[in-house]
Structure formats: C-alpha cells, structure tokens
Image (tube, rainbow, N blue to C red; front, top):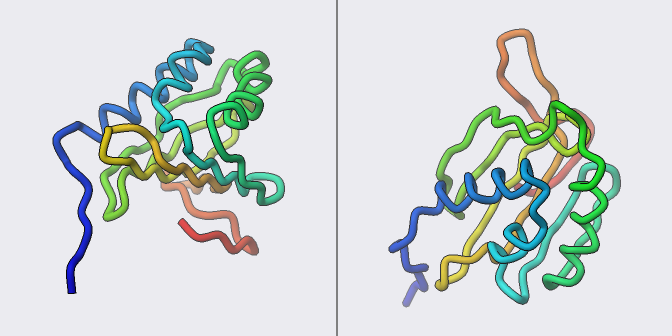
Amino acid sequence: METTTLRNDFDQVALVVDWLDACRQSNIDALLELYAPDAALECGCDEVKTIKGRAGIEEYWRPRLAAFSPLAFGLEEIAPSAEGVVLDYLSFDGKPVRICFSFDDAGKIRQSRCIPVAGTEDGALHEVSGRRHRI
C-alpha cells in the first residue's frame, strides 16, 4: 500500500505564528496569502459551517478582524500534530478556541477547523462539553 506524504521542508508552526500575527495586525491580505487558493475553513464555534476558497475565507475573516476585542488572538498553546498544527488561542471576540491546520505541498493552509474550548482552573483548555466536532 502506497502512502502519500506532504513535504515537510517548511516550518508549519512558524506558518501558524504568521497566521496569528496577521490576525493581530488585522492584515487580511497577509492572512489570505497563507491560505491555498482552494482552502477550506470549518468553523464550529457557533454553528458548524464550512467556507471554501480565498474569497469565502476573506468574507468570513474581514468583519472579525475589523471588530476584534483587546484580548483577541492571544496565544495559549501551539503544537505540531499528526495532521499539521493545533493552536489554542483567544478568538476575535476574546473566547478560547482550538484550531487545527493542515497544509498543502506548497506550504499553504489547505484546511483549518476550529471549535470553542473552555478554560479550567489549572489553565488547561478543554473542548466545550456537549459539542461533537472532529479535530
């Protein structure tokens, strides 16, 4: 059985840090440049919705970047995963979110999937109970 692997000649964690920096700077052009042209974004924070392509991703992010809270885009934790990178951060409205990124061979974001998480007294973030999402 042949398996397909992605090139790992780029720093996936650094690319996610660039994503977070573009969000912090409300730089929609820099943010969109990180996504593949046919990228997909799956958001499960309010209701599950899937957005495809850079135009759809721009439509999703533009209003969020224009009206973010002072606590927005704070880094909680970042780690490589089997599929790419997992980032726990504070969303545009200051709420804890977990987002998983996967990448294409060109070093662009192919897919991102986010869900809300809840903080605990020990500082760890956990998925909000009662919601089923694949991450």
